[in-house]
Image (cartoon, rainbow, N blue to C red):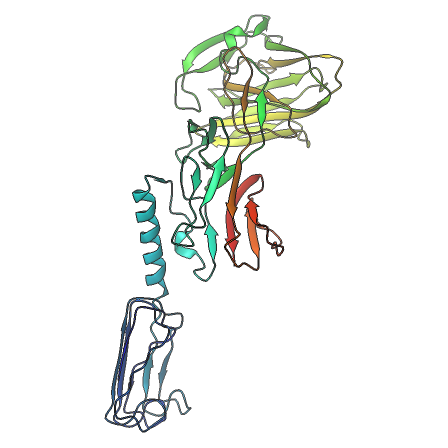
Length: 411
């Protein structure tokens, strides 16, 4: 008996001298699997249900095995006495083949393989699987289906930034290029709304107004890998920088800035007159925290010693708005590094938008796939590490929601 194919094998069995319907006396059956078999059987001299005495069976393929079972001297229909059965699990072979095919397809298409995180644990029974692994301008690749019919279309219309795997704020210049972001430490697909940085000088703090005698020294290493951060030193508690923004429309705003410890603990105030009160943050050798934490004060660790602090507030639409950055409120006075101020009409900060004398806008990300030719029963999204309730009403065009996307699986 010979089984030869190129499809899926779910079981691989070796039996010797089995006195049963599955492996009769003097039968030798060997299945060697490296591939996929559905079932294709040719029998010689068969007088039993599966293999006759004196029969030889071999299975040769190049696919996957889902089960691994070993039985010895088991008195049951599957494993009779004196039977040795080995079902070898070679599921990894198919996954490895899928990964290699995926990498080859990306390379052939002149795409970028950003990482391979999660590829070795995909569910190969899914119809469509997207992980934040690979892209090119206009395309976000899905590992399944293998022929690329499940790849996503990407539209943004402007450049945008991300935190790359090296902890550097990188500008993605391709207008329709998706962003794989590492702010959380692991890759996520970053999808954001349109936003505008209203702080017209996000990096050149010498263009801000000054009160007291703050000292600014530029040419410092910054989160974007350049030497364009500033050392902010403060001879007295009243020393501050300030950027006036006029009267902003009523609404919710988020202001943020990157800070880094230098060589002494610092108490600094990141204030906005529309917000009211003080917003003191502690910059220490062990990190940055809000002195009095609340829901409107936030700290994100960007790596390499840099932290992004932010506050959210509601503007009344009638008062003039200005950002104030007070120096060290403690004694003795110590300096700290600053980079990348941002003010945006959002309920929370979004990715950094650089400005140099005028406001700047990052357009909305829209990432979608046409499902009209697919037969699907559910779509499961994993966002910020949380698997969402499956979508069972399948749209003709599926658009990935905004947020930090870990995985999309369709079955």
